[in-house]
Length: 244
Image 1: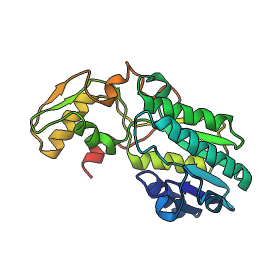
Image 2: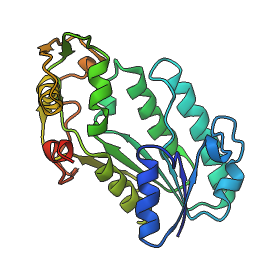
Image 3: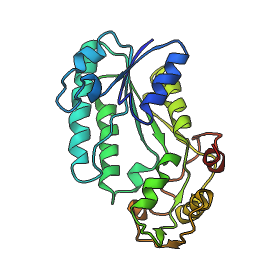
């Protein structure tokens, strides 16, 4: 199959391209560095020419009030071009529990992206993943200083980027789901606990202070970010990933 991977040079996209190529598919990465601008539509027709599948892993450059407009414009452009090119399957990556965290504008924007895809003219699949292991450093940096890391006790079920990429690759080479597949890591942690595990592994002696108002994930209530029944559970544990 010929698969256009938009955002194909990023954290997940580069991994998806590698997996698809190893399995004998023609996976072509597209990004601003290859001449594709999904916001303006420049280069989109060329990127989708002859493609059987398009995987859209492009992300909003910000998590603020600009994100809904970004996802609306880019999805409208993508679906119009995909329909014109005769692409038979469109895949996006979203977030487990996004609709349960309405206080975060970025999560509302991801739900909007899903809704535009569902209502569009191209058969589709949505892969929803929990938070990535790779984002833990950035998550801690938002609410830390040289002496202390502050994190909420929000429950999360993180997953390795490699496992997310495998899930996206598997879905993109199958028949359109016309629905959603949820994927998550094998363990549930309180975010403050995960912070302590991470700092200990790095030899960082700063204490983690539990602060349920700290950072982006403080807005997530209860088990909103935990995978529900029917999710695909990946095998890589957080400590295994840390030890690599």
